[in-house]
Image (tube, rainbow, N blue to C red; front, side, top):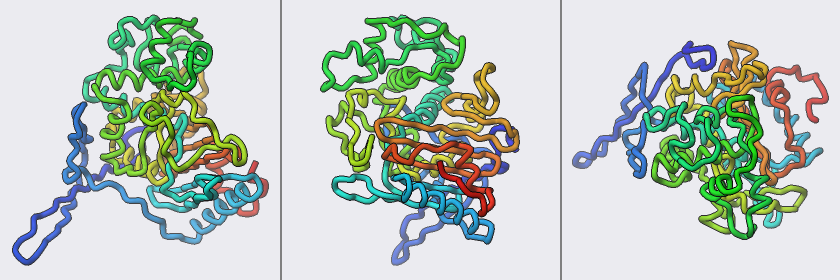
Length: 411
């Protein structure tokens, strides 16, 4: 056991080698190498430096063998989400896995109610605030490279930023005290037809300098400004757009092929086939605030999130040492079962089974990414409607173990 927060006992990375064809015979050999420690691959900023033939053989999602105990679990989970779908209108995709083996997955309903396009397990949803763990991974990869420090202040990268004494660590842990940029933008942004960008967000904070909510490092105060700023800082340090940096550092090496970041400035019409709905058949607006990313903006599927989940157990895209920092509570004033690390919500009440997770809501989408690192269980729920899509984290965890006779599981 590496530590109380991360519980993979063995780190195994499988490398493969492709041999060239010889006359009349093409030989393909897979070389399996057991490695005790492996440094994650990195790409120099500004270039697509990942060579796919030199990367570890990435985890491939696969179904579990259903023992009688697992068949009972599948039955409970299926009944629960079938009731949600039929009785409360749940529309989305669901995946439950244990040690990377898929126990249950299913797509319910439509990606687009007007065209009646059905959802699949590869459908990419707006992650809303579940984008924050991915932004954190991008930032922490730069910290591992020595291009950022958790104790760097914002002024190192934005000299005229008017709020002093705020470190990268405070942004990651929501201890900056900064006001929410969305409320400011709604007051001062002149034309809602023009997308607000991360740079624009910085500019209006500098120009209008609204009063901060709290002094730096005073207390936990969840603010989307923190992660929008972090995405902007990644761009300043790397020299490339945040969406491209995440593609190179996370999506491409982990084969998250259904994943991308939608930036409204690049396309004034969202090209994603999965639409968000704020009510039955009423599509959510593609707001001018979608020009800001980092706090939101990632689109991905349940399958790709499982790939990310399993990559973390392999020490990718950041090392176990950096994961330990990310999964360490940053708030003495919060409860151990409801705390926040560096980009992740934390329930560490059971030291043998830490729960590392995040949830999100934005413009018709509601999302959950829950990891029990002791049991190796993963729960991913992505919905593109608000109807029937609100869940309790403990409620979802209970689906694994509640006796089949227990009733009233759904809200």
